[in-house]
Image: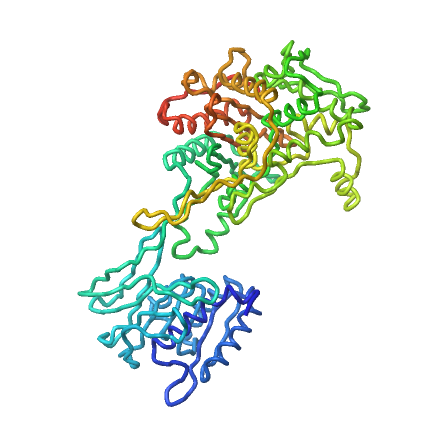
Length: 624
């Protein structure tokens, strides 16, 4: 069968193994009926009903009783049914391994039990009436499973084989004298069948496992950098003042960090806050704990903000606007703009005033200095000019550059889920207005929208991995990769089976005449010498003379009276880029004082030039 039934194939194989293991083989005693009880999720009702019919047709004498319900109800049925002795079956198969395991160990389920999800455990009836043993061929090519030892005494035992991080873990019987042999089995590709991976033996009351190891996947993650990233991000977020919801209840703020190797197109570190322990899932997770991991009031720890978090990028976006301005020749690197701290949107009728953070006036600024001090007014002017010249340039120069850098689409990092972000355009604005005029009362795009977009505000939303990858693309001179999380597959002895090559997603035109002034401005952010450089305090004492850091602070408005999100994006070393880093911290205030110190910790580890325990002190100053 194909389609929705394919995920359910495993229980058919495991149930078959259990039936053969107990000597049923498709026939009850004296040609009677063997009953197979299957407990599974209601979401797969159609698939399981089809498989049940197929299974009964293939095995005359077997009747399949389906128990399908939502997970909480299913667990309740398993437990209550066992207590009442109403699980009338010769063999029980279930996808709810954790609940069934507890029932078996408590002696509440007497029939032989087979667990799904790549694990086989058989509870043999007292006396092992079938007398099975050795290795049985279940009639499918490639399918072999070790069965019970014929010397098993009267009584019941369970043998459970789990696999986690390549280590086989066994839970012995409550009867220490029991001898047992079982196996972990796993489905192969398509209809290739099942192969046995591990032989488990019990001798003198102790279980010992003889493991047949699989291949290893070597990740691109730098373990030391990952540890520093998680610790630095966690410490930084714990200093952030908690937010409150509309009822005044405290809400945990979240954050993330992504570090990419720009040479190899790989992920060096990736952290999300708040976090959780994957070990919680090894033996199954309770509905209560699962709800906590998805609770917004607790910061939704189960959400990987690095790839799913959507944020206004704030001033980290100014690199995009600068590239668009240079590409269209609306600006030149040398042109000087008089920044008086305030700006009036041209051709505007209301809400026309804009200003720098704190109304700071920076005076004469060219492109490089505008990035170093983060002059909003300079970039407001670029956004306005690009819209005013739309007949020559088209309506979306900033958005077009953003898409080339990977914003508005998935990076292709290869994780199960990834957000694509949002890059607003005049066309999209009109579409939304037509679809829902109540939510989107205007379908027009105004010069003020371009002004907001120029500094990374408005309806714009990006993910942290997109931000890091865009800076990595700029660092390479235009090569945009789909980030890899793995380097190679290798055998246990180290023999390389397959190298995982970098994946080039696009080539972006970043000419040296555009790259140089932008890079100079970003280097000035951390190193000065301009005393108003936004991250100069955050990187005070860092060995910038040997490992220069090109960075950009960002402080993004979040609406209402909520604190701003803090961001920082960096490339290092600036003279020969190897890493690109992004840090996003929700409701943390200024990027210069909150996010930049976190990035410094990771860059210190990646460079090997600063110990992660080096005191940084309190970072002050900076309005970005």
